[in-house]
Image (cartoon, rainbow, N blue to C red; front, top):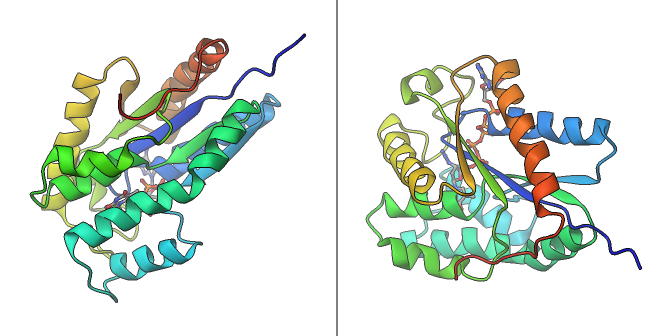
Length: 212
Ligand code: Z5A
């Protein structure tokens, strides 16, 4: 009896304007061209009621405590958790623009402990591959629209970048640091190679959860 091969959970992380949307779109198109079932997702997902509360906070029209906004970001992921697991098990690969690591990084820079930040993420699906698009913050500030939302400040982005780099070092078996300062095509080339490889690798392996 043939069993459906599972899809892979591939996440893009990075600072604001580092090219996550651009590269995750290109990766989705790459899989579509190969007729691989794929779904593009993005966190925060601003379409839900929780997502709309997050949107108001990011646009500075609603004030929230650090704890409340952290839990809302996490709850936004939990809204999609079961759907994500189902899609992966049915063979669909998920390409996700920001995930739990953004949740941890953007709250940790406000001074909350890592353990506190991680706790609400426990039990979400663990990515098979995370791309960290590393780009000099000074160059991001000149990209379109930088500076409109609450975290879009050079100082915050630099601290967040440091936390992503720590993840790359610590969890190197599924994190890949990609030099995002090159041309869009050059960045895509590296990503596609790694992503094709991971799709093959996960075929026989079970879905894992954050964090054991
Ligand atoms: N946040 C949080 O606190 N907690 C959480 O749990 C989560 C998020 C999930 C909104 O996230 C904020 O929420 C975010 C973290 C926080 N705050 N900050 N900072 P978001 O994902 O909705 O928004 P964003 O990070 O600001 O994403 P973005 O604006 O969509 O940026 P991007 O996707 O990384 O970049 P892009 O749209 O692909 O590219 C930006 C521009 O650069 C565009 O004009 C491109 O054409 C250009 N670009 C892209 N690649 C290149 C290269 N290689 N060279 C030159 N130019 C390029």
